[in-house]
Length: 120
Image (cartoon, rainbow, N blue to C red):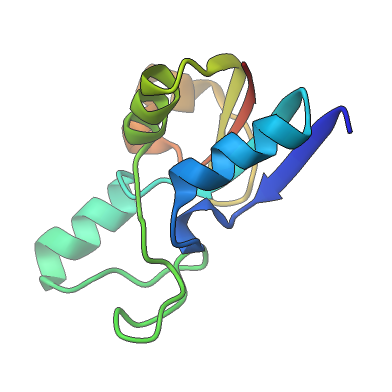
């Protein structure tokens, strides 16, 4: 297997660090996508409503969500760094899954979802 793909599931597994290791054991490369818990709408919802946010990418209540390990882009990048995983490419998209020049200004705040291409 050349490339293993995991889309929008990293935050829903028991041990995401182990899963990333397994993906790179099985394949030479991996593509990982996940929602950014640092997205501005998520932060604003939490700030103004004082509750765990619900959105199209996080559509569950806090008590019935499959999302047990929410993270930001920087969190994932730190995980990769700590495991010696190389980030070959990173694409950050908005809530419509489009790239936009403005996201590049402040991806951790303006990007809702990331697509990481990684390898050992």
